[in-house]
Image (cartoon, rainbow, N blue to C red; front, side, top):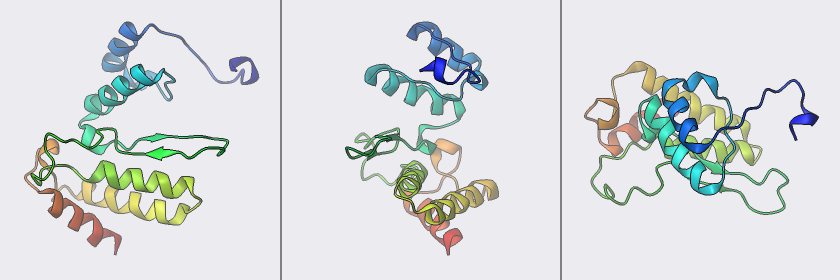
Length: 148
């Protein structure tokens, strides 16, 4: 595949050194292609290094659209904190934006992304994973208000 795109730089790493590089030099990477197991591990590591897995949307895309794509936050269902009101809903919101983009609803996707960015930039409403004290409901309400 790389031969078809000579202007795109590619590298190959064993998973152990890739994880080290991802922690020490996250700026080296734009896209990582991995098997399902390693991809799942790296999709938790990357956002954790960036600050919180509560911010990271996720998707398993079928680019040729012959089969459905699947959208879920990187953190999955987080059963350990389910019902406690402490989960950061931003990853789910951004996952929804990714799904809207995939479905051709770019304006809706951009509106969600802009609302999330506005709330995070303001810094007044943050869940515990971001150093704040807002509940899931409070963070959701702040983003909905910014969306309106």
